[in-house]
Length: 320
Image (cartoon, rainbow, N blue to C red; front, side, top):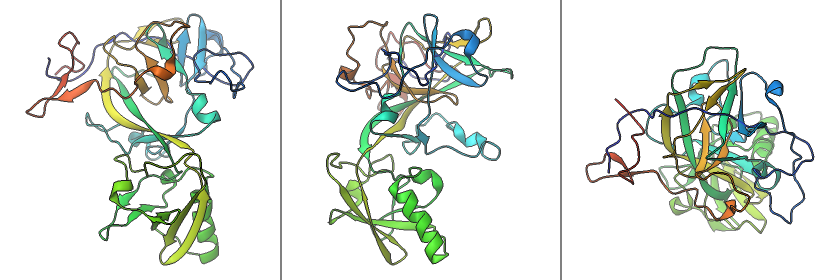
């Protein structure tokens, strides 16, 4: 086993672009019995847009689309918060993808594919990768904490509410009718069951919800009760590991960023890209992407608290 130090030297490869057309796409997690939810437009290198990330498969480029991020900030004022601040993962840095269309357009990158980035600006010498666990489904609410009296609370900050979701709509209505902005509100119960700390995931979202039934969520803005009807139809992905790479290859019109062979299968973003699924195998039409464990950790802690790799053949992911 190897003690982890600081920064992975990896070869950087190409990216893929994904938008709307009618082609069947092997890189999208679309069940075989489901109609193509988003048609896919395949791009060439001449179609790539500035400041965009793509997954490159052969000569085809697919866009990496965005979900809703808890760490999204105004680009003009808080852009620095878009990236993780240190080596330690932050589980409350997460993505929301609505069940159905949104989650099905998360693209898949294989070991022999690459990430591509096109820009007219200076490119960084170091690239940050964040890995995310697939935490299943929740309601469109996050940033939840435990109050001093044991209640689950969250603020009505825009990043905590699924845009145009039921909680977002109610909080806007509260502002309009009461002419008052509530800094926090309490999530009291779901379908009559009182909520407590055991219902709160490390990612700041409510866990263990039934995805097949309507949920009646009782919240309080101050002492005013509101009942919100919703479903656990928001798939949440949460930050579990962070890596850095510092090797880049320039091609005609774009830069290529490749993963290390040490990278395990999982959900990733690089720098300010959207979320994509990475499979640590060369592409094959015989791979069943639904059977892969995407949450298996690369790091573990030894007895003194140091992060170490699971296999002594793994290269260092960091260097001093």
